[in-house]
Image 1 (tube, rainbow, N blue to C red):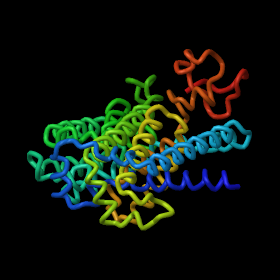
Image 2 (tube, helix red, strand yellow):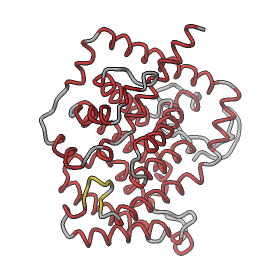
Image 3 (tube, rainbow, N blue to C red):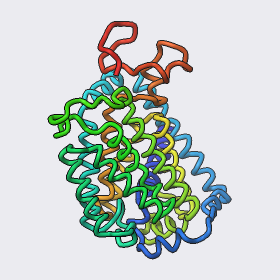
Image 4 (cartoon, rainbow, N blue to C red):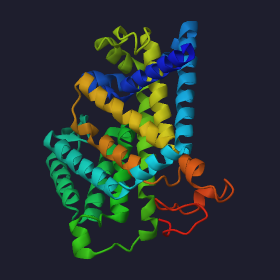
Length: 363
C-alpha cells in the first residue's frame, strides 16, 4: 500500500505539472510582457532546479510513477477488456474528421472576429492588409464549415500561414497544429458530409495517401507542443515562473512542488514528453486523453479564452478515435505478422479484422 501511495502521488504530481504545461503563457500573462520576454536572450536557468537534491528526488519519483502508469496502460491494452475498449473507440473513426473540421472552422471564425491570427497574442494589425486577412479568415471558416471548395480554403489558409511566418517568425511554430490540418485540407479536401462530396464526388488525386492524413496532423501537433515546451519553458522560463507566482500554484502542495523552478522544469519536461509521445504515437490515446483533461482544467483555472483551444480539442478527439497508423502503438499492439522492421510499412487493418484470418481489406 505504501508503494501504491508513493506511485499514485508521483503520477498526481506529473498530472499537475501537465496542467501548467497545458497553460499557454501567451494567454495568461500580459501580451506586452510576453513578447518582451521572448525577445530576451535564451536562458536555461530552469535546470538550476536540479541543483537541489530534494528536487532531484522528486524528479526521480515522478519518472518512476509515470513509467508505472505507462506499464499499467500497456498491460491493460494487452488484456481482452483493453482490446475490446480500443476497438469500440475506433468505431467512431468516421466522425473524427468532423471534430477537426468543426474546430478549425470555429477557430478561424473567432480568430477573425477578435482581429487575431490563430491566437490572441498574434494581432492581425501587425500583418499586411489586416482587413483583407480578416476577410480571408472568415471566408476559410465558412468554406470549411460547409465543406465547400475545401482544397481552395486550404490553399488560402496556407497563404495566410506563410505570411504569418514572415511576420511573426519562428514563434508561429507554436501553431504547427494548424499547418498540419491545412496541408491535409489542401491535399485531400473533404468529401464526407460536405457539399464537395455531393457536388464533385470522391476525390481521386492523392486518394491512396489519404489514409495518412491523421498521421500528418498528429506529427505537426506533436511538433507544436514540443516547440512550445523548448521555446518557452526551457529557453524563456521566466514566463512560466510568472504564471506560477501570479497564480500562486505552489500553494497547492498536493499537486505542485514548492520550488517554482522545479514547476517550470517539470512542466517543460511534461509538455515535451507529451509532444514526443504524440509524434511517435507511443501510448498515444492515454497521452492525448491526459492532455485533453488538463487542457480543460487549465481553461477553468486560468480562465483562458476558449477559442484558441478549439483546435486542440478537435485534433485530440480525432487522434483518440482514429486507427493507429505509423505509430509505435501500431507496432506494439496491431502488427505482429512480420519482423518489426517490416511492420511500419504493412497496411493497417480495419477494426474487427483478426490476425491470420480473413477480413475487410486494409485501409
